[in-house]
Amino acid sequence: EERQEQREARRAEAEAAKAAKDARRREAERRAAAKAAAAAEANRQMAKARDAAENPPAPVELGAEEVLSALEAAVEVGRGGFGVVYAVELPSLPGWGRVAVKRALSGVDAREVMAEVSNLRRCAHRVVLPLLGYCGAPRAACIVTALMRGGSLDDHLLLLPDARARLQKRFKGTPGLSWSQRLSALCDAARALVHLHSNRILHRDVKTANILLDGALLPLHTAGGERRVYRAFLSDVGLAKERAGGSMTMATNATSNVYSTGFADPNFLDSNQHSAKTDAYGLGISLLMALTGGEPSRGLRSAYEDDVLDMVAGKEGAGGGLLHAARRAARWPQAATQELVKAVHGLVYERKSQRLPLPEALAAFEAALRFGGDDDGGADAGAAAAAAPVAAERPTASGAGFSASGATSSGASASASSSSGGGSTSAPGSLTRAVGGLHKEYVAGGGDASLARLQDRISNAYLSMMGHLERRHEQRGGAPLPKGSSEEEKINALAPRSAGQSQLCDSAHTLRRWYNACRHERGQWSVGARPSDKEVARVIERIRGLLDLERRA
Image (cartoon, rainbow, N blue to C red; front, side, top):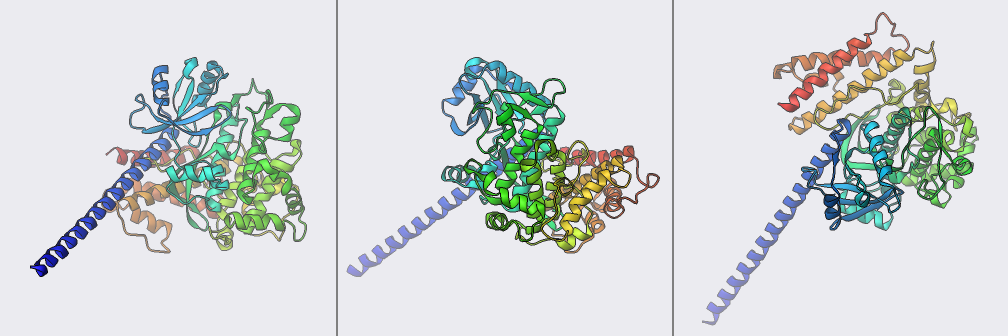
C-alpha cells in the first residue's frame, strides 16, 4: 500500500511537471506569436508611413473633442520647441494604429499651427515626416504625423537612460547605429533641407533630435556591396517658416523656442537672422556629433576645432583626437572621416560668406557613404577606384518602391574637398577621387550639367529598381543569388522572361546598359550617343508602371 502511494505521488508529480512544462511552452508560444504580430504590425505601419511620405494623403481635419479625448490616455514620447508629442490612436485615422500628435504649447497661436499645416502640405517629400492630420481649434491645436518607431538620431548617438528606455519600447534593432546608418540618416536630413530651401522654407531648428528613423532596415547598394540602413525623416517643421519673397534670410525673435543649444549658428545669435546657412550649420554640428559621439550642448564645436582646422590645413599627423573619437563612436573608416571633416569645416567653421552650400555638402555625404568603407571600418579602396562616383539615392521600400525622380538635390553638386580650402591629411585616395568626381560631373569638362543630371537620374533609378527587385525576390522566398553574379545575370534571375515578365526584363536591361555607360563612360558619353531625357523618362515610367501593376494585382 505504501509503495502504491509512492507510485501515485511520483505519477502526480510527473503530471504536474508535464502540465507546468506545457503551460510554459504555451506561454512562450503566445509571447512569440504576440511579438511576431507586433513586429508585423510595426512593419506595416512603417511601410504605410513611407508610402504617405512618397504619396502624401490629404490631411484629416480633426475635431477638438476627438483630440482632447485621445490625449486623456496618451503617452508622452517627446518635447520640442513647438509643443509636446504624444503617441495616441485616433478614430479619424483608421489603420494607422498609434500616431504622433504634436500639441502646441500654451501661448502658441492656433493660426500659427494652420500656417505650419500649409507649409507642411507644400513641402511634402519622401524624407520629410508626412502630415496625416491637424486640429486648428485653439484649445486643441495640434499637428498629427506618423509615429517613427526607430527613435531619433539623438537617442541613438547619446544613448542616455531615458533614450534607452524609449528605444526598448519601440525600436527592434540594435541601438547605437553603425557609421553607415548614421551617415545615411544625415543624407536623408540633408535631402529634406535642400527640398525645403528650394521651396523657400527654412527649418530653423536642425538638430539630431529632429531626425527620426522609421525602424525598418532597407538595403542600400554601394561600391563596397550592400549595406542595411534606416530611412530617416526630418521632423519638427512646426518651427519652419516661409522666407518672405526671395529673401535668403529671415529675422526672428531669439528665444529658447527658436533654437537649440549647441546647434545654433553663432551668426544667428549675433544677427538674429535665420538663413539656409544657419540651417546647414545645424546639420554640420549633427555630422560632428555622429562622427565623435560628443554632445553639442557641452562644447562639441570648440572641443574639436583645432583638429578640424589642422586636418583641413593638411598638417601631418593632425586630427588624432577626432579620428580616435570617430573609431570609438562607430568604427568610422579613416578615409570617410577625413573627407567628412572637410564638410564639417565648410558647414560649421568657415566664415559665413565662404560656407559650403548645402547641395555640395550632400554630395560629399553621399560619396562618403558610397565609397567610404565597410561597416567594420575597413576602406573599400578597390571598389571606389573601380566604380564611378555616383551619388547614392536610397531605394524605396513601400509597395512598388521604385522612385523615378532620380535627383537627390537641387542645383549643381560639388565636392567638399574643392570648397574646403585645404588639403587632405594624406595623399588623395579613392574616396577623395570619388568626392572630386562629383564635382567634375557638374562643373568640369565644359560644365555639361544636363548630362550629369541625366546620368544621376539613370544611376539612381537603376539602384532603386534593383533594390526593389531584390526585396521582392527575398519576400517570395527565392534562393540567394550566386556570389559574383553580373548585373545582367541578376536581372535575368529577378525578372525572368519565362515568368511572364518580358516587358519588365527588357526595360530593366535597357536601364542597366545606360547605367553601365554612366559608370564607365562619364565625360565621353557624347550628346549623339546618349539617350534623350524623354527616352529615359519613358523607360523609367514603364518600369514603375509595371511594378505598380504587379503590386495592385
